[in-house]
Image (cartoon, rainbow, N blue to C red; front, side, top):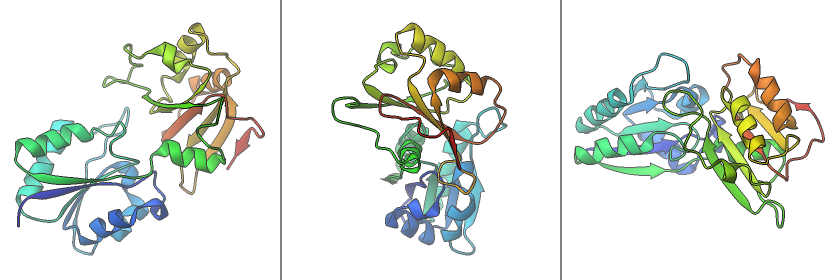
Length: 245
């Protein structure tokens, strides 16, 4: 059998948000290399006897280096097994998908990419809001909250992130959002701009907090939770309630 890898995006964690194609690939996989956030109920679709290999990376935690994950992926595919690389959210969004694709191409290994529900879309759905609105939120932008060293990236176009007519989703930004908020305010974003902070999106311990960018920045200065989270801010986010579970 020719070497082949299926990159499967698991969505934010709720197995009911998996696509039919994703479930099909999981059921037929001989080897699954999975991220931490793709574990749990998602792996229940994998057939008995398949090899499950955790290769997840989490901020501020001991994690396998990317070159090690890429090498392992190539080695597994060369065995001729049905290989699934299971990525959280949508693998094409801040998921280091490109590094693994490059490794496969260099090894002459074919692949497919199966998209998934990104956490920003799941967060908006959980909060009961759209991400765009005619006239007041015509643009949607995604940004990572940290660089490869865990710091706020210094090459971001902050003027764009301070656009009062855009909805912005910040991925992996819990630690750096206080600094980001100060920079955005200096670029003209009002401190009372509505924000929604969603932890453990789509899971049983999901928590939604409606606030403002300034209040959220103050809250996150003392936050010590390891729960994954996504931050949304922009003109269409209201503050009907402060906390929801």
